[in-house]
Structures are given as structure tokens and as C-alpha cells.
Length: 345
Image 1 (cartoon, rainbow, N blue to C red):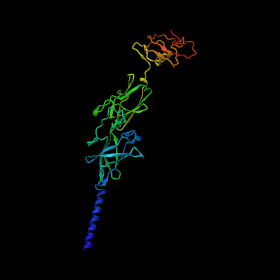
Image 2 (image 1 turned 60 degrees about the horizontal axis):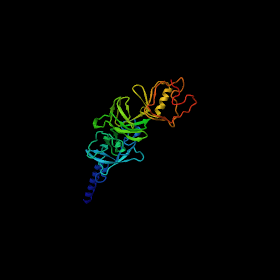
Image 3 (image 1 turned 90 degrees about the vertical axis):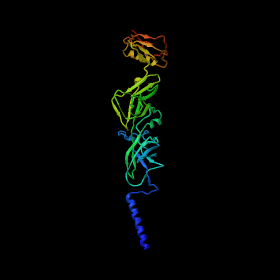
Image 4 (image 1 turned 180 degrees about the horizontal axis):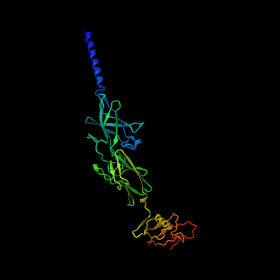
């Protein structure tokens, strides 16, 4: 009788073990198996696909932790970028969720995270993104309501924001500031953004997705001399979540030419370069323009071409020195007409 009792007990234990295994329970540790996620979806190599822009220039740099929500509970998971592929990361936690069976789970995750949040926040970028910290902190990446499977717990993050990059060419001397202007204020977002200076005359900013109408003055450059250069959107466009939009802007038109044109057509000279430009203008056929000096002119180190180079190209306008001086004039030429003026009418 005793032997039969032990055999029945062993059979009961065997049946219990089978039932537990068939149900998919994973009795590892006191609570189960800790869930470790793989974070993907921010691959910058696929920039043509919305949602593939990386948060920090191509990888997870700058993202230390993300919020992970399951069943209404939010926990913090730490981010460890892959050394082999920094566009992928491993998410772990000191207070993790646990696998208790093989069933799929539904997960929402996001960054940045503010304590107390129970859902991903709305997009709200910073007005001043001039520092890398504020630039990166304006981003918002979300893995929203994703199904995660046992054995391959992967979260694919996408961007809720867009990125606008500005490349300035031709003339940046004396540039004091660059701003994105005329932006949508929906969601309490800023109408103007000071972008992050990446160097090499390249500026970048995180913006809320929005439509930009043709003619919108959306890039404003201010120079130390007080002049402002405004670049307008040529064609209507949509800045979509996850997209990166680059604009190359020539500032040649903002260059100080060294002269101004008055309402009466007179050219007022403000620098040596301006006077040399006007000499070329006269010698190119505009022989009757009136010129006024607004300052003393130093031509030292510059090879001067006389105003009016021949009898067939005489200067016939009025030149008003305004009591100013011209010094350092040097002419190297084989022409017989040499001086500030070569030939006048």
C-alpha cells in the first residue's frame, strides 16, 4: 500500500509539471523572466522612409533611458547602444517587467520621459536649441502600442518630430544669428527657433510636423552690421514626422557691396571694395552714374583700375568726394590714361 501511495504522488507531480509547461509559464526566479527589449527603427540609412531619423546624428547617443508602459504601469528602462550597430540598442531595467508565459504583450515606450507621465506627451519643441542638449531634448520618439513576442521582444521607435537643417553658402562673414521663423504655434510650439550650430555653416533644429506655405519667411539671418537676410519658402511643403529637410541657402545677396543706391540713383560709396566695384561698373558701360564718397577710402594693397579707361569709355557722371580722402592708390598698367580717373567726358 505504501508503494502505491508514492507512485500516485509521483504521477500527480508529473501531471502538474505538464500542465504548467503547456500553459507556457516560465518559473525563472521569483517573478518570472525579466523582459529585455531590443530598440530599433531609427536607422538613418533609410532617410527616405518616414520615422527613420535617428535622435542624435545617426545613433542612440544622448538617449539614456526610455519610459516603457504595460497594462497602465510605466517603468524606466536604461538604453545601451549596440557597439556593432549604434542605431540599435538594448533596453534593460533594475525594476523590469517579467515574462510569465509565452503570450504576446502590448507595449508603448517613449523618450524623453517626465516622471508621472502615463502616455507619450504631445510634441513641444524648445525655442532655443542652440545647445546640443536642448536640440536633442526637443525630439520625441515613440513605440506606440506595439505587439511584442516572446523570444524576439523588439520595439520599433518612430519620430513624432521633423528635423530642419540649413546649410549657408557664399557669404557668412559677420553673421550674428540664424533663426527659423514663421513656424506654426499649434500645440503651444514656438513661432521662432534658434537652431543648433553644427559647424561648417550648418544649422539644425527639431520642429513640430507642420505645413509651410509658399512665401513663408522661414529662415532669417542677421549680421553684425544690423542687416537682415530673409529666405522664403519657394514651394509649399509639409514637414512630416520622422522626416529630415535640408535647405542650402546662398547669402551672396546679403554681402555688403561697399555701396548703396539712393532713391535719386546716386551711388554712395562706403568702402574701398565698393569704389573698385563702381569703377568696374563704369568701365563696363555705365559711364554716367553719379558717385558720392561717404567715408575715407584706403586702397593700399589693391591694384586700382582707373574710372574711365579710354576715350571711347569716358566717365561722364558726377563724382563727389564729400571732403573725404583717397589714399594708397596704385595702378599697374601699360595704358597712358592713369590716375583715379583715366578718361572723363
